[in-house]
Length: 135
Image 1 (cartoon, rainbow, N blue to C red):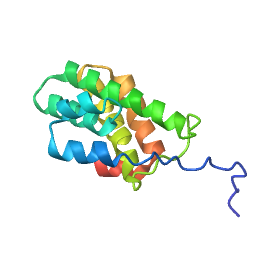
Image 2 (spheres, one colour):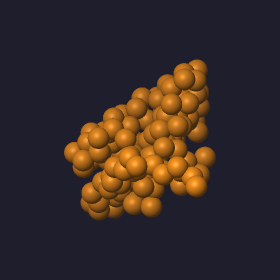
Image 3 (cartoon, rainbow, N blue to C red):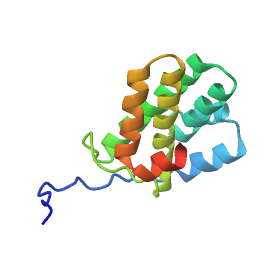
């Protein structure tokens, strides 16, 4: 008989929907979106991805780190205690998870291998489906 884990997992953290910011990003540039909605992680993640794709790894790192920290603030306000599931299937969580993924990529690009590995592990620990979808 396999041992049973008696420690309960914390509940999944579900960020609130921000329809206004999402709709704005769909119709505008990510730059304009962060000017209107500076807390919106999905826009920061897109800025980081675009910067990486254009070869600007330092700017990508700054954008990704901003999205990551904005997301951590939102997670904490939503009851997250520093660990536990952050489900990819809940679309409002995706901006944070994408920022975390872009931070891992940008950290690797600037030679921060340890940080890149920590971010990649944090993404997988948050939700393996997120890591699978983004890598």
